[in-house]
Structure formats: C-alpha cells, structure tokens
Image (cartoon, rainbow, N blue to C red):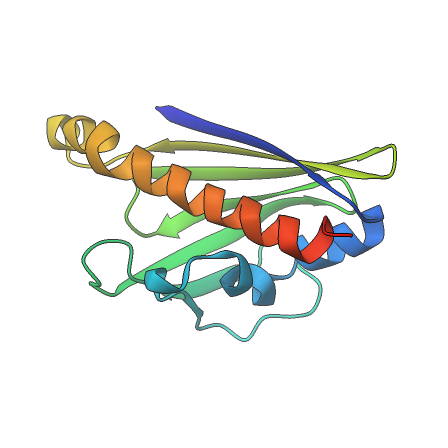
Length: 151
C-alpha cells in the first residue's frame, strides 16, 4: 500500500474552509481541467456519512472512467473520509483533516491507496501513478493559494 500526505495552510476561518472543501461541487475547481472531472450525482450542500458520489474522470490518455466514492466518516469542522467503491484503484482511502491554527486552518490530506494488477501496478506506480497524484495535489495547492492565501 502507498500513502500520499500533504499539508497546506489556508488563510480563512474553519467554517469557510470546511464549507468549501467538504462540498463535492467544489472538487472540479481544485482538479486540473485535463482530468475531465465531472460530478455526475446530484449532491447535497452538506455531505453526510454514506453519501455515494459518482464522477467521470479522464486520468490517463483522455480515456473516460467512472469513479464512485462513498463518504464513510464525517466529523463536522474536523475531518471527513472518502473511499473508492468503483474506480481505478484497488484501494483508495482519502482522509481530509482540518485543524484551526493562528490566522487560519491547516488542511491535511492522507491518501492511502493500492493499485490493481499486481506486479504491473507496482511497475506503474513510480512511473505514472505517483507522479500523476503529486501533480494533481500540486495543482490543488496552487488553486487553494490563489483562492484563500493571496492578500
């Protein structure tokens, strides 16, 4: 199993930060456009445990793929977890943590994942998957900086 960890300071109050990042409708705003990320499910304003969300995404070579995640845990203003139910990974467990700090919020992402296809998945990880995930999270970092951290 692999793990990606990211931490970012968000210069806003916890309510604003939580409201933005816990809304599935905002995912496309923080995802690179080349990923062709579209939420296919009608999503509520406020997420809840058990919420199933279906997406269309084009992670590699522009090939469309459906991805279904379930929100498995929610503690308002503190954390939520999404887990893949159908998609490109054998296992996908994404923890989103929010901690109030001086003048803002530290947002911490922990993505634990496993690839399918045994040895082929292990070969693809450093060549394709790890780089792509890092690229996606770097894009998100820049967008969040522009949205919240520019004076």
